[in-house]
Length: 178
Image (cartoon, rainbow, N blue to C red):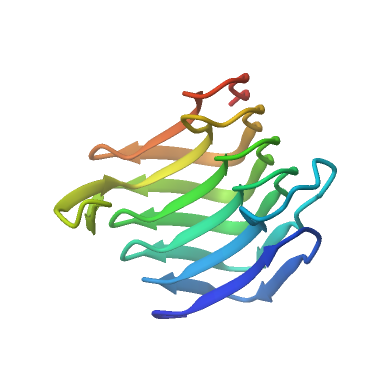
């Protein structure tokens, strides 16, 4: 997928499942979660499930996201592959920006998980900036809820050149476990 947008974002439910031999995601977005107009605290977003018998590669700012913007709980992000590579400011992100809990991120990569470097981005004020390659789970400013856990199961894990893995809270709630 190059410059693509796949979404099951809305008021809840809606799972996304991709099964492939190899999956390369470049400058694209896979998106699920609860929209800002949701006023149902029991709303549950669907899960993002990516399964590849070979490799999964995210590059050029590719973005996998399952988030809460209104009220409800985000779904899970589950990745099963031989190897997972994130580069050039790509990210896997579960977060809450509203009222509800972020989902868990689980990666099962038999061989390796590698995160490397950063990429250029346009900031909310229109200026240029840099975003580091990352796997994150967070409670953002003004949000109320708990960040989910990040579980990485692999033979080899590397994060280089500023890339990082984080579960944190800047809002009201608890960070998850890594």
